[in-house]
Length: 431
Image 1 (cartoon, rainbow, N blue to C red):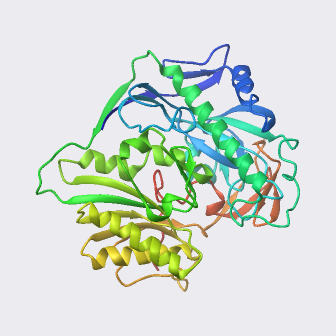
Image 2 (cartoon, rainbow, N blue to C red; image 1 turned 90 degrees about the horizontal axis):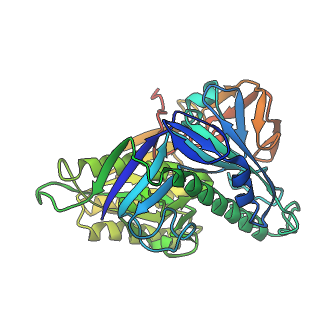
Image 3 (cartoon, rainbow, N blue to C red; image 1 turned 90 degrees about the vertical axis):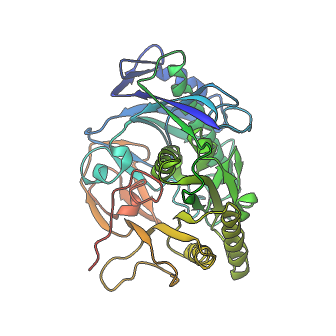
């Protein structure tokens, strides 16, 4: 696969009569955008905002964050399975609007469940902006209002719900939010069609010196969509082998808005750039780490580690999940890789709050090379703010706050502040 990724640097954005990019300024036709959104009966209304770094704005109820992209040449289209048919992408030419993000927000719903969807916030100023990747981007924000006629139980507490996804209607509504977000991200990216990018980078994992160490990336996620198919209860259980170019084209859409990070993965981009020079980057494996029983943990960790072994790898960069029982899946997979002679570096966040707290719910002695992506339980104080996009009430773990007021929260409440994919500069102090 050979992909030319063209970059258009966005330095500002405003509303106008057409959607265009010119001299680093993105102009967005707000009314045309609203009409497109409201074609979906899932939404009763939608507001479109622009939020810039340094402005006194708080974005509440973040559900999706994506970088606008558009494929100008090659098979398929960006976000395959949503925008175009689910054909294999990662070849040809794709344009990206760098420095800007498409953000979809919606109020938290009573039938939501314990999922972090709808909880996270983004501050465009202050300490929250410093630790959030999207406090530094120019953001086109969609405030989506659910159509309760299309989802009758959306505002009710159901008798049964998925503990992560919520009721069946909440899952369906969130699917509509994702479809809306990718549609708008592609719409914005299409403004680059026919224009010359500011820069072009080519990504291709061609043949290289066989003496170079073979390296793979292993990424654990609990809810993800690949080529438009949600894989929580599907093939992701045993792993999927992908080319990194597929992620750059939006084939992987990750729950809770981490798609932007996946599109710009520091790990995938870094290894692609090192391919043929310092390493032989042989592939990218993504697998599911949400398993309720020891038997399933054994099955998933064995399958994921076996798939990596089949690539003939000598080293693995492992992006793991921390907290709860997910960490058993992580550590068992790492253990099996190390026992097979594959050197494994684990990138993982932790939950420690002090010197007496180890920060990990479970660990194996084979985990000897760990990159700590920070602690989600680190406390942070956010100042009161004038403007809120999204719900006026912030809901976290069934506790409510005035979204405009001063907030004493944990860093995990800030969108993507702690993540193992990209644009994270947090660390943990060793006492």
